[in-house]
Image 1 (tube, helix red, strand yellow):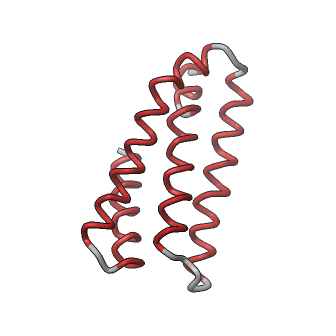
Image 2: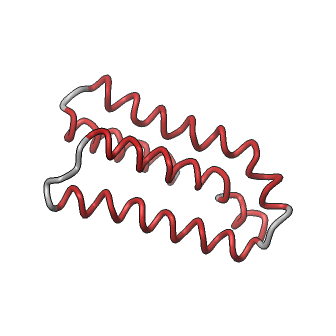
Image 3: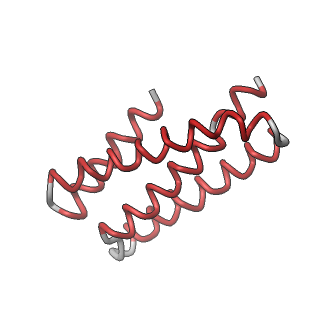
Length: 105
């Protein structure tokens, strides 16, 4: 449910920044592709490393990424390219390390 809400919010932010439905759709698609693509290797990576540390790194990267998007948007400096790069990187890290919390539980 969280991924769906994030994808919807990301699409809406992408549309607000670019004014293009196509670019907003591709933004969400690129984000999901990065997350799913890194998720393939993420399970193996999580099994071989300290899960507590991976959960902390994932949370910290998410905080920095989404916080920087919020700050750039707040000050009117958010551009579509910045949004695309930050969203894809944050989603890739979440795909790689996101399963650590599930494995730890």
